[in-house]
Structure formats: structure tokens, C-alpha cells
Image 1 (cartoon, rainbow, N blue to C red):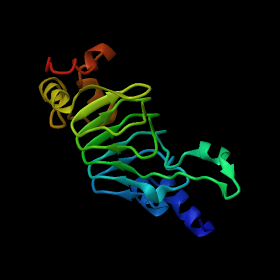
Image 2: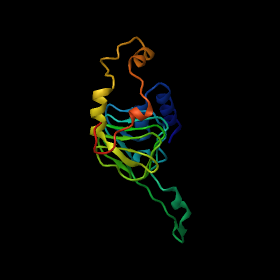
Image 3: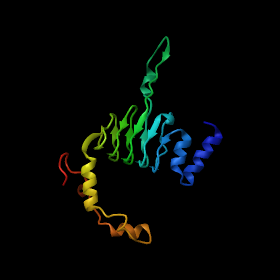
Length: 183
């Protein structure tokens, strides 16, 4: 990467243009996204992010298998690169790791701290190390529409006022219901 491109990316990040910075790095980013990580690895051009996706802070995208560096013969070392694809309407929680070759489908949620080492079909909530299906997006959406405060209801002058209007929930109250149940 040229020094000018590197400076451009740093300035974009500094002034709050994270999506544009990711694009300048080579990441393919759709419309209406929120990108809060800088960790796109050494091959950012292998990453595709769909529309209306949130990638939380400290998420790491891995697009190569570094262990192959240890394998060599008379032809030299071996390399393995694989793209990462994120569908539309996806949330990737803070400090998650997305491994090489993973495709996360549409309407998915990846819980904070997850290690996603296998592709996730559309419509599921996954979490854990390694990430496993823990619920369905439709169940989460139904519960959120029924119980979480709406944008229209959060009328306040500042963030603190708006947050104080929302009922505070414990972690167990926010956890998705078991698969196949909606409440």
C-alpha cells in the first residue's frame, strides 16, 4: 500500500468515515453499513460485506491460513487464501473472528466474541467458540419488535436522555429464546 493511500485511510478513520476507509483498503462494502473495525487482514480485497451490515469494533477478518507457511518442499512454501462474504442485514458482534472461506448469509446475527469457522445459513443467530446456531433471526426480530423501545419513542435531547427512556435489560432477558420457540 502506498504511503498516500495509507494516509488517506488513516484520515478517513480519524474523521469518522469508516465505510469509506474500508473501501479504500479494498473491502467491498454495500449500502447503509456501519463499520467499526479496522482489522481486515492482509488481503482486504477478499472481503465482501452486503447491505445494511454492522461490523462492531475489534472484529477480525481472516482471509488466509498462516499455518501453511510451515509446509514446504522443493517447490517452496504453500499458501491458502479464501474469501469472506457477509450477506445483507447482518450484525457481527464485538471481538468476533471470521475465519477464511466463511459466508454469513442474509439476516444473521453473530454474538460478541464468536469464532465463526463455518458458513452460517441465512436467518440464524450464532454465538460461541466455535460459533453454533443458538436461535433464529425471525424469533429475535419478533421479540425485538414486541419488547424493545422504538426509534420514534426515543425522543430526547442527547444520547443519555434517550437511553434512560429505554427499559434496561439484564443479559438473560436479552438472550435469544431456544430454537423453535418465539417467547
